[in-house]
Length: 389
Ligand code: SF4
Image 1 (cartoon, rainbow, N blue to C red):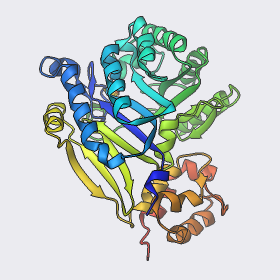
Image 2 (cartoon, protein in one colour):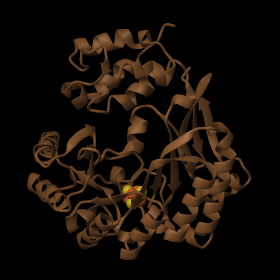
Image 3 (cartoon, rainbow, N blue to C red):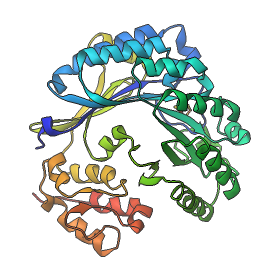
Image 4 (tube, rainbow, N blue to C red):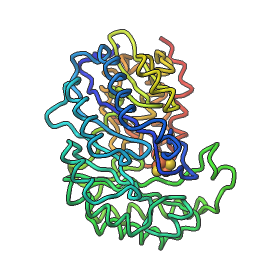
């Protein structure tokens, strides 16, 4: 089994409210107004504190290298609330001196002075959910902000944070190549250190799944992906993960830890965690519904499900993350992070190499460009793994 102390540890904090739900969203996000009167932010912070305190024995002695405050829309929380949250974390966990502390923000909740106050509280990196600079597209996506608000939010983020990310989506309903070109040009005008570019997908159970909007076909989607490379490469960005592009030195360390199969503690409604112990790797999920989560956390039992990841599941789980990275990971990290021998995946790796999906490199586990394009086919090889040990 992996040496837990040697593994990097991250902390994820989920703040599960949004002004309203977007029709494509399947995250654990709840409409803010419905809950505001019953569940003020102070009580939610009390619950997070109780959750963290109950979790401490699981991460005792370990240093935390990154924190990610995600949602939902964390920027609905006041700077004072974020200040209290980070003080709670710092008082209970050993935060590395150079820890990356990311917070998600949406332009619809933007007030100019808030971003500087978040930075003052200790947030080092802001991730802004812009999605598009086209007002018509934003309306179809059900976003609460417009392009003018998005621009104002990015300008303020650039003033307040050394590092920030802009989230954009592509293959939007009715989007053309020129429309995407315009969105990229708008984003690049702010010289962001990091861009996340997500292909819009229709998730089961969402309003978009019930009434699908007209989406670009596969050929146009492929042309859009090619356009990202043609535009962002010359602008100084490297695609280091399926959806993540960064300038040198600006990769998101928190997300890298997920993809490199590191450990993370997740607190907050519906948060997921993955923690290694000397004899097992455990995944845990908190209760999703905010009120139930708060009541349970204050009674020291916010966990809905806790399960040991079996040895049979570990190769797929590792690959599901590692193969998203365009550089892959050192081959030795498979044994370090899973506690299994590389022999456990030798046959599947050989098959993937033969099919041109995996690089033939004994020192790295890395998808070929073809493997990255057909990632599901590549992953399927490891899903079927029967790991004879
Ligand atoms: S703002 Fe983000 S988290 Fe909230 S509903 Fe929209 S997509 Fe979901």
